[in-house]
Image (cartoon, rainbow, N blue to C red; front, side, top):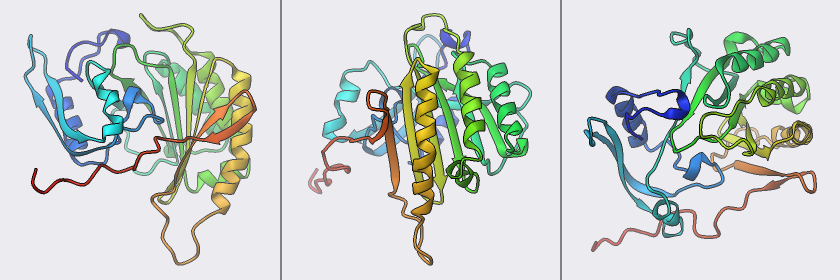
Length: 280
């Protein structure tokens, strides 16, 4: 990630201050590392350190050093660099402060403009969600050409509303309007499928569903089936008196060939890095 202009976003540039904020976030260890901005490609690292240097030709660069799991090293060796994804408020909403959003709605700004996001937000409001509980933002995926992605996160107590079906139709309407208003940016692939990322959060637990498709009907079917899975997810709450299990982070992919959600199966390797050799 650098301060160079990004053609896909109309020449948008991030200054050194923005890069320093990104570095600070990475240094907290709370930002997930993924290849190609893809949740199905987690990159396992430790001892990560991020900083900003002056780069070349007057542009600043966000740089990283880390140890990487051997089974994930190919994500780095097959790419010329790492990129970052950030979210930013819509024009005119820079001062909005929503401490705990019940719904977070965002989409890649190269493919979906602010008017499309506002139209989707209005449909959620029509469906009964207070506008003061919705955080609507642009997503910027810094890479050669960003992918067309839509992101919706629903937290408690509204996560339960999806499980009962009362929010499901409004959620579908919001996704549908974005789907229909997709635009292809300069250098973008018209044939690239849209990725819809739906996430439910309940305490420390989460259920994420990912759909890749060109067809509205596919998304409609996937979300309809997701309602049932959401119900099961909410009913499987932790026993009284216990804490939510932070390891209960479920990721599902929609298989349109058979019309069902299937668990994502990451690498068979140990999910953690090998132990550090104390002798170096």
